[in-house]
Image 1 (tube, rainbow, N blue to C red):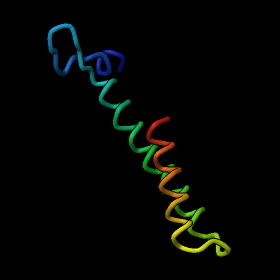
Image 2 (image 1 turned 180 degrees about the vertical axis):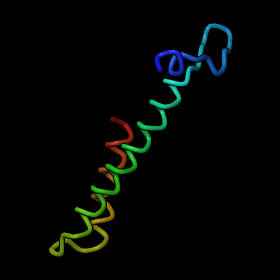
Image 3 (image 1 turned 30 degrees about the vertical axis):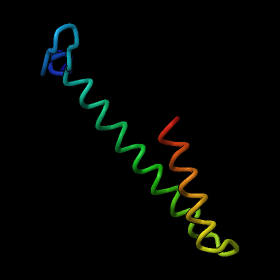
Image 4 (image 1 turned 90 degrees about the vertical axis):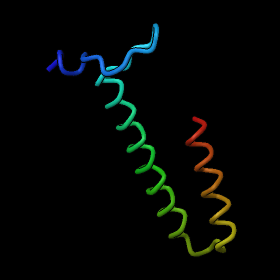
Length: 68
């Protein structure tokens, strides 16, 4: 299994892209996407806040997660 994860897919000069790097990249974006969906559901369930404020709060949260 370790041999599979250490398999080199591409090499650009000194940069090596392995299977483990690609899998980490894909799993990272899936986790971020799921986190943003959860945040959106939580924010939009709040009934005391009007729609425009919910959108602004979600946008700020999304930018924070992306930058972080």
